[in-house]
Image 1 (cartoon, one colour):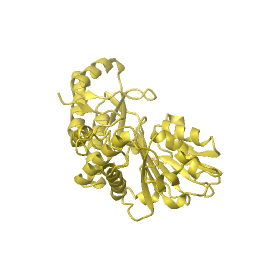
Image 2: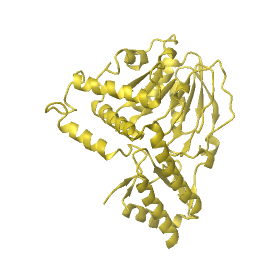
Image 3: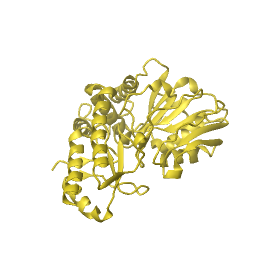
Length: 353
């Protein structure tokens, strides 16, 4: 039976990417496995350079003063690295969920952090708007998509200070003017590859402006000077991410996948809104195209619904404990057909009820 993977992460990956990466584990370079060759070998250095170049090409940032890095430690390490490299006196953060909350906690270790706005009062079911960002802050930090609560920023504030964005769960999913950001970071395992590597895209001219000494492993300038090879990189995760980026480019890039993502989200939310047995969690205007969160209006149907979607080959639909209910994560590689299967199960539940 075909499985329909709605897991929030690690994410579903294209079949051709899984097949190529699996083959590379067996034989990547003349009888040597991808995971046993030297990361300094030409074969892997070419992979790293290709992956970094593809990032800038797909984001439209080539020749605009940006560099791409593949690091380790997940987005959680970036909560700390951003502050270490950019925070001199004070910074502003938009608090829209669990991950921005954690980013704020880490940054507070070093200096003054201000929440310019928060949606915590409504369990993060909306994106705050109409807030002011003081021009004397060192940077402003936001989270573009909130995996747990199913909200997504549809626009970003214009500000005179560096704009930093955690795009872990919607990177490469929609067209944006990426030049508005000075630093983007994203754990690969949400929409780009397997767990183990973290993408950082940074405008070089924002670095070198803090007075503190930064440990080498946490210094963006060190990693840039070594082309993401300061220490042994996670070769499998970087290679698989490169394959995923190649797959995306072959499809037609971000603009092409955005159209597919909009179709999937439209179908999913239409069923949630029209089916009286379900209710969406997030405010409609802030709904995420990546993570649709919803609950049953009658919890007595939970056992029946759970059995139905599991028998249909659906995986990873349970919601996070912070929200409850269900979460359908519709990352780039999830097909429209998989969404149709879920929607049919939801419709069948209504017919049975």
